[in-house]
Amino acid sequence: KLREALAAEAEAVDQLVETAAATLAEAGHGASEAILRRVATTLRAAAVDEEAGAALSKGVLTEDLEPRGVETLMEGFAGRGPARARPQDRRRERERERKREQELRRELDARGRELETAEKTAEASSRETAALEKAVQKARLAVEQAEARLNAARSRA
Image (cartoon, rainbow, N blue to C red; front, side, top):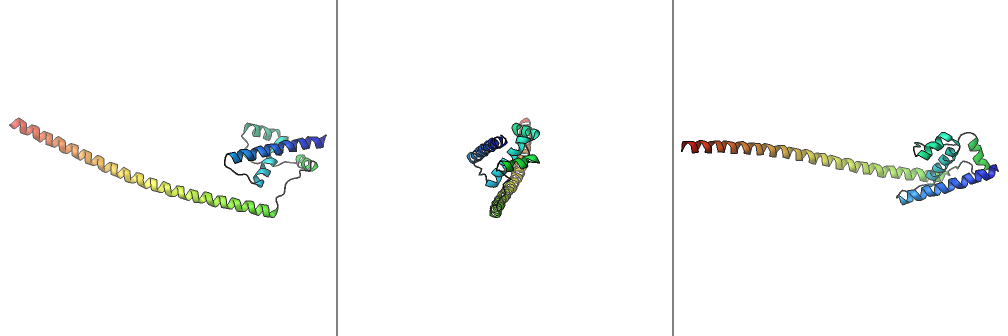
């Protein structure tokens, strides 16, 4: 019975992991085998930890979970021992993560340059606006003075 229960749990976890992979793919995010293993490990751990299971159900889980104690042993009985990534898989995953980090850094740098350009443009616009406002005030004063001279000339005439 224990093996049957563990097999049923393993099947449910596999289905959930497949659903997660499909959902990520539909959203345009690929999921590596390492990520999917982390999802599966978290699901297995949440299945035996009431508090973690509740957090997962509510969608407020903030970190990966690792099975503790007996549940790790039970995974072995189900023929689902902790997955060990092969060295070449780990290297490939690190290389993908490194490339992704480089892409994000380049994007961040580009956004920083765009921000600098926008700030400079805003400063220049602000200076131009201030100069135009000053010119408008000067023109209004000149109009007022001209009207005053005109009124004075009319009253003398």
